[in-house]
Amino acid sequence: MSQQISGNNIPLSEVYWSLVNKADKKFSKIRDLPFYERTRYENYFFKVFKVYTQLWKFQQENRQKLVEAGLKRWEIGEIASRIAQLYYGHYMRTSDAGYLSESYVFYEAILTREYFKEGLFQDLNIANKQLRFLARFLMVCLVLGRREMVHQLVDQFKRLIDECKRTFQETDFKEWKVVAQDIVRFLKSDTAFMNTRPLRYSLVLDPNLDAGTPRASRSLRLTDAILSSYYYNEVKYSELTLDSFRMLQCLEWEPSGSLYQSTGAKMGLNAPVGVARINSQSMNDPTLPPNPRKAVLYRPSITHFLAVLATICEELPSHGILLLYLSASGKNGQISTSPLSARSATNVEENILRDFESHTIKQEGDPSLQITPSGQSLKQISEDAASTPCGLSFGSHGLTGSSYIYPSDLVPFTRKPLFIIIDSDSSTVFKNICGAEKGEPAALLLSPSHTPPLISADFSRQPSGSLFTIFLTSPVQAFCLLSGISASDMETDIFTKAEKLLSSFMNEWASTLATSDTLHPVWSQILKDPFLRRLLLRFIFCRAVLALYTPVFNNKQNQPECFPSLPELLVPTAPAVQSAVLLMANVFGATSKFTLPQDITMLESF
Image (cartoon, rainbow, N blue to C red; front, side, top):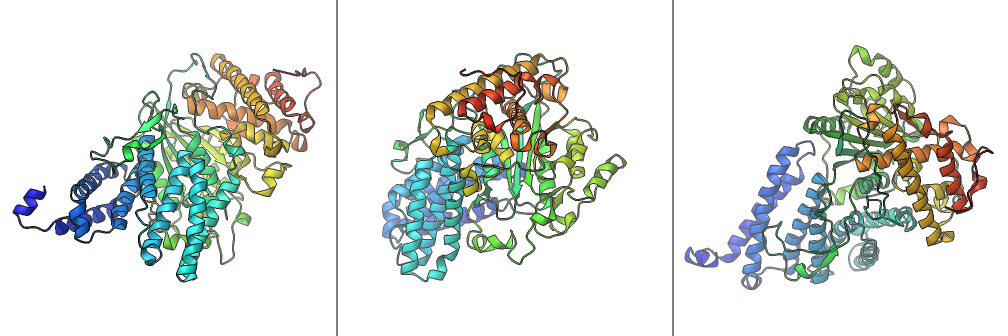
């Protein structure tokens, strides 16, 4: 390449900056593509990556001459950072964990080589680039599960902010201070206890749930999921809320743990010198099935949410089912009416970090436009939507039509198989979907409309997200939170015993479901999918625990519901289910927290 350039008398620096400009333009376009234009994104991604491959290769082959021509180290770091952003953005679009691992490799190389160190405290622009790089790397490590690196980066992030405030104008870093506060708050909520074991599905740690041969005419596989939550002042980092983060992790495979050796093969270029020697947790385990694709929507407008839902339903394969997880309040009283609303409160952060994450999902359409339900069969659902609580609030506008998701909004999409999880104080209104479907009966898991009182010191000291979501993602931890068991009092062997005990009961329940003559086809068709089966079994455990929890014993408002109903053998009053709760309480010494029938035999050990 350099000979051709020399022959054409084109300076190396001009060729380089031409490639930089070309890459920047394409990067901006792909970053702005809305999530529902999936086919267009897939095609464009590889075009953008091809340009960055060419750019990176060119600067590697001509590094010395380009440096002599004025190339700065931070400019090399900027290219590497863009490639890492592309990898992470593609992971968020496809859920291919290999791209997440590649993003980590590039970010770690930037960290170890200190590309942004030179001129850091002389140039405000470079200081902001270093802070933005650390913030993005934090997100990758958080999703990847690299908690040690997360804490290391948080310390470095906070130190750098303090140093920059002393060097530059303190007002230039107020926004970054908000970001630091967000990640600290996130980590205080998502404690080490909550991550005692991976939330991902582990072939080693999770039970080998052999559901046998369910009596169903077909078997569906979870291929896609939409995850979204909205609460005023909820725990989040960047555009990832705590509840959505937990569900995101819960719907992925845990890799085998083999060391990962990046060769740059997926990039089609030589990785930065030394990157191939960086060991990281393998997220690209060829022995595992692909992860379900997930769309994580951060405070979407209703029109944008419906556009994404419509696109995914349209592209859903014949053997696929879509999981829809929505966590939000349904009452106007939960929405701040002060000038510092949930959306405006984060504007300070979002202004400076508009391109904080390359996977930002742009909100399309006017959020004030009301989606009007139509269709004669939806009359009852529309009437329910007119009452309070009527749906899920995904905004702070105060106008129900413009910011609420109603049950009637979801009914048109029941032409495809849906697995719906509603975590809200207005969850019960969504049971009206059952019976109003347009072709495919929907599976619904609905949270309690009232959260039971918690006596756990850990939970009361720092909000830890929705209890219902914790039960679905970390059931043993949820049991401890409900029972007032502190993480500081937890012994490893006790926790391990409880995990094994719950796994054993879940295996039994799975067999019961598979052999039941009364199991509804909606449930039998998903039993062979490990993610959906695990969610259903954890729901059974959650429902039983809350039904027997003494402070809310027999209080229906504090119990979750599922539609269609499950067999009588697995309802909270069934002996097999009550025994599981009793044995779990016995392991933790918390039997006094639960109200159980006298005829249930106490087992001292398992």
